[in-house]
Length: 120
Image (cartoon, rainbow, N blue to C red; front, side):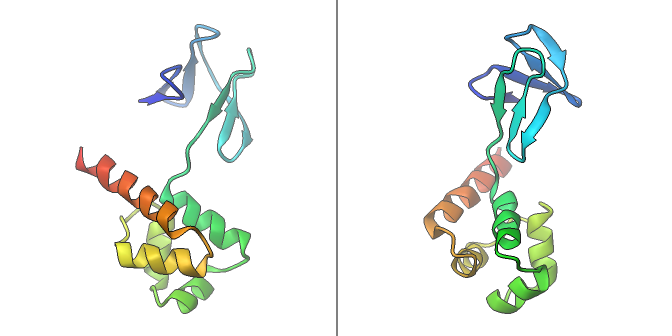
């Protein structure tokens, strides 16, 4: 898997840092940011739609049950989306984006990324 302009390669739990020319355990600075403890190189992780649904829900203080009630989407579907068990339907993504006050186009772009990745 190539990440961050081909400068990092995953192997198990370690990441190869081309700056250090060695495998190392990066330190998590934030949910989507890892830092090489040796050279300080930063690896930004791009969140998926699955991640964003959970992030927005938690940010707004909503439980899965409450989000389910507000969207009309079942609790199990929301749980399965957040845990990357299913690829949501476009209609579901639009409902979630509306209730979570997220950019619908951005959520749809993220859905397309998932569909394209699964088509390979």
